[in-house]
Length: 200
Image 1 (cartoon, rainbow, N blue to C red):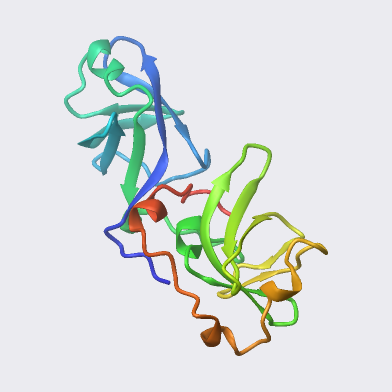
Image 2 (image 1 turned 120 degrees about the horizontal axis):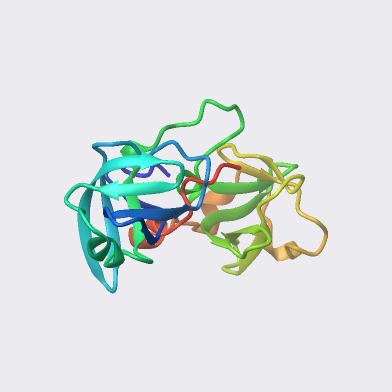
C-alpha cells in the first residue's frame, strides 16, 4: 500500500512555551527526525481545530511559527498534535529502515512465507511499539514490533513470531493470501495518526 504524498502524518506534539517570543518546546515521536525546517508548512490540531502554520525557526527541540510573536500566542498551541505531509519526510537511506506510515496495509508473512495478515495500525504502548495485524481469520493480533520478531520490513513484512502469538487458523499457506479477502485499512485518518517518523 502506497501512502499518498499529500497525506498528513503525525510528527509529535507541541509542548509548553519557551521564553517570551512565541517559541515552544516540541516532543517528536522520533527525536532524531530531520523533517522540520524553516519555511515548512505544517498542521497543528487542537480541540478539533486545524491550524495551518509555517515553521520560522527550529533548533534543539524548540520551534517557532511565523506570526507567533509572544508567549500568549504560543500558549494557544500547547498539546496540539503536529503534522506534516508525507511528501515532506526526509527519507532514510539506512538499509532495513522504514517509516511506520508506509507499512500500514502491507502484507505480513512468517519465516516460511505463510500469510499472517496485514498491518492494520501501530500502537505506541510506551515500553514497546506494537503492530496491529489483522489475520485471515479476522482476528487482530498485537505484535511487538521489535527485533528479533521483525525479521524484514519487506514488503512483505516478515515476522518470526513466538509460539502462541498466532493461532493455527490465523496463518494460511504462501500464495493464498488472495483467498483470505485481506484488504488494506481504508481509514486514511487513522493512518495519519500513526507515529510515522519512528524508524524500525
